[in-house]
Amino acid sequence: MDATPFLALSAILFTIGSVGVLTRRNAIVVFMCVELMLNASNLALVTFSRVHGNLEGQVAAFFVMVVAAAEVVVGLAIIMTIFRTRRSASVDDASLLKY
Amino acid sequence: MFAFWVLAPVMVLAALGILVVRKAVHAALLLAVVMVSLAILYAVQDAPFLFAVQIIVYTGAILMLFLFVLMLVGVDAADSVVETIRAQRLMATVVGLALGLLLVVGVSQVTIGTVVGLEAQNRSGNIEGLAALLFSKYILAFEATSALLITAAIGAMVLAHRERLTPKVTQADLVAQRMRDYADHGKHLGPLPSPGVYARHNAVDTPALLPDGTPAETSVSRILVARGSVRSAPTLADDVEVVTAQLSTDGEIRPGAPGEQAAPAEGEDA
Image (tube, rainbow over all chains, first blue to last red; front, side, top):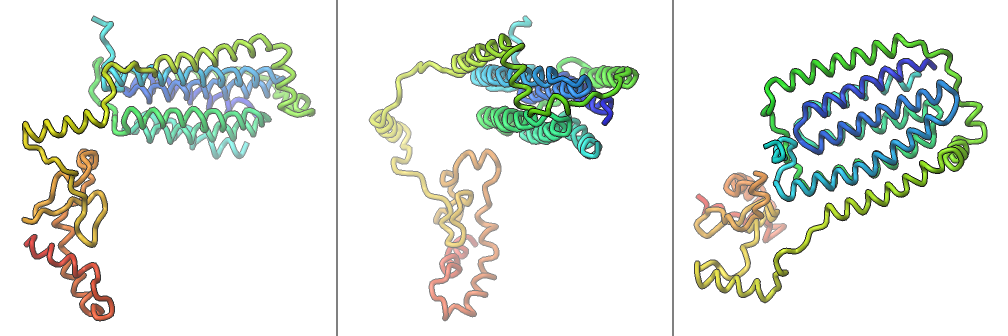
């Protein structure tokens, strides 16, 4: 089983995630796209783990999942706090520090 | 490899869908498709533990959290199409295409060598192999993640916590407020009318009819009104005559059938 298609899929998913972060306005959807990028990198880690024949890549993917879980918890709490004060989940509305 | 060629187009389409769908809930569902497909790709690549963790942690916990926050923030919080920076969408797409092209070309140019495979590593079990690594070589990182998880939990609690700024409204306060409203503005003191006095439709989205045949605005929840899912009472009464005609044929068998009670309401309506 060749490894290159898996890596190409990982690259494509990462690209889609990054385009989503750049284009979407809803903070929650932006966050989902970040998750998509993390997942894409996980796929690459698991693939390389198989290529090299050791489990360290899978351990790394596991750590990425743990950090992603922690990040989601804090990120969503921040989004909720911003929504509570500004009544909006758009990333463009929270621009007070710009001025 | 069969699983890959089946799942890869599905995953790419679902991921592209996240970029274009208007509602955040749809994006979450498409993300679930991508994540479950990824889990299957992990299983294909000799990673059964990550397969389980992907489904439990990502599709189970993280996506549920996303949906939960979506419900709190408001499901109908659709994306605005107004661009803050001019031509940002176009530029982002061009840059994204360039990045994707670069990555894919780079990946396909690299010689990866022969795939060793994990048969030797997984011989005594994938989970045992991972545990042996996790609790020896990566023990420090593993302990650090426990600190990270606790910090994240406390951080989320602190961020989501809200101090009460006004005293809690008691039932006595509510009664006094209602009395004051009645005295000042003559606001009706009793309970609101219940929806759907039609014998055939007593659903909460059907407004009650006033004696003059107009629908009573206060009888339906204002959330339903805001969503625009309130049924129009007069149109519901349109087929009453048809139903009464049907019922009158077997009316002798079933006296007091619902259609007969609806008929007077129709008469008032006309």
